[in-house]
Length: 446
Image (cartoon, rainbow, N blue to C red):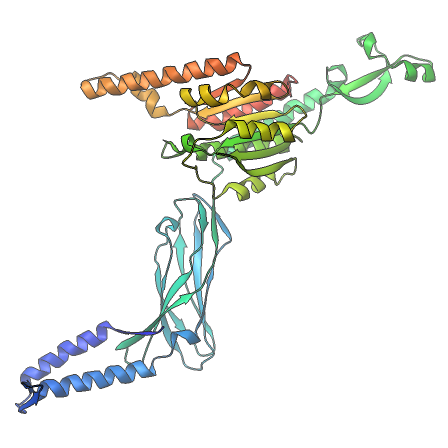
């Protein structure tokens, strides 16, 4: 529905009319509903009302303007983008249109309001910059459109439904580190390729003639009989190995470290693993779970796999419920029978790990190589070493020491089960995941 809205010009004109009333000659009094009203007041207000009504009638209807938003489909958190409002009309008269948009504060728009001059039978635009502060899916819908008459005394205002969708993607904070590790791994891989005939790989590569340094158990007797000279088999490390990231999105991942939820650091680590694994020809997949597995990305060695993970997880938020490790393990065992490098990104809460994770961990360890990774809060480490100066400081230090000791106990229990444990601060977390993967690959544990 279109509503009339008085403008500041009408208010200013009313003030001027009030001043004019003071200098006008007396025109008598008219009785209205038993009360006497100064005729000067009636005349001035009648003129104001007629001007406002005439101006409002001459204002174009907000419905006749075509309004749409133009913006990038996605913006990476930490980067800036531009939102543009485009207003078009088929009338031949140039008009001014005011817009107020329904933009969430976390989009960081410089302004949510704009005035657009729309030429006759043309299109006018206005724009604003955006610096989002939170990732996720944003779907602004309503726009308030205002138009005014020639005098600008009265606006016509109407809410318009202009739905759109904007995705704010998580940042890849460890991108440079991933690039360095991948470059180093490729250099090492070149050296391994040149010597892979001597290695202890398991995948058949080729046949060649026996040399003094070869083991006799590598001799292929059938090929030797055909060629009348000793022939050996050469092997290489298995290609297209599988890395599977198990991302806990339950309640314990909602805790904030360095100003963001632990889940954010876990997603960054998963992206680094995807960049490394696909860059080295291995397959990378991901499973996010809380009370049940809810997001599955099939393992693939496509170079676009990291982008696929980002697209699937950009609006993931921690669920306010305990994660069900048993359902996660059941899903993994049902879909991954071949040996896989499993990276479980969670939090080392002693009660949760002892009650839910440790009982099911041996089921994974039978076939797979398991890494349990968590982000350690650097503030807790700092509190544990600070010199106490008062009673509150002593309690804080005591709690920090107890927390760190609990994490050490949990890590020791997980290692006793055969898991690799990573417990690092945010700046080292993703890099430690990459090192664990590269180390396992280098010694042939995958």
